[in-house]
Image (cartoon, rainbow, N blue to C red; front, top):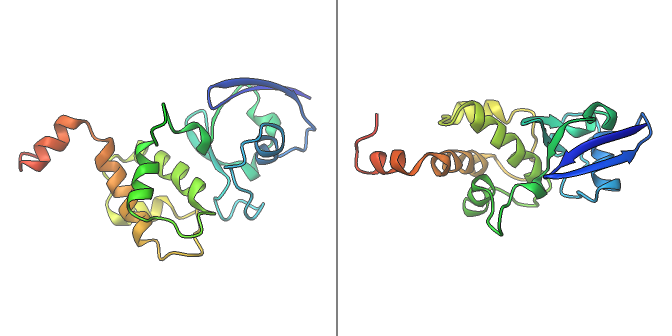
Length: 167
């Protein structure tokens, strides 16, 4: 079956088997190996990508279902040599150990922050519930998401908070 999708800003048209998972197509056909194959059951979240702006576990979606969609992978986040603010926050807060879960955690965190730009710890933990990390206790991951929320706020709002003029 012929499908067309935009992945990380580039349009691709490919022939795919109807049973090909989106994660397989991204990795094996398009070379987007930052999208990790974890459990193949949708339980771990390592394969999370954005489909039309929302996080999706790519091991639970067929490539044909993404026909006509815009996909963003972990490789598509950095711009002009600069990490996305969530990527930078994960780096700065040591929110990874082995790094296997990190692409999915970052992609899910971006979606979480789009829904709630100022989440408390409980909200972050709930928002990342479908993404598993086997190495950490999640403290640094939660800290990174909250740091990223701060980084994503407009500069004027950050300045007001710094001088005590915030809410």
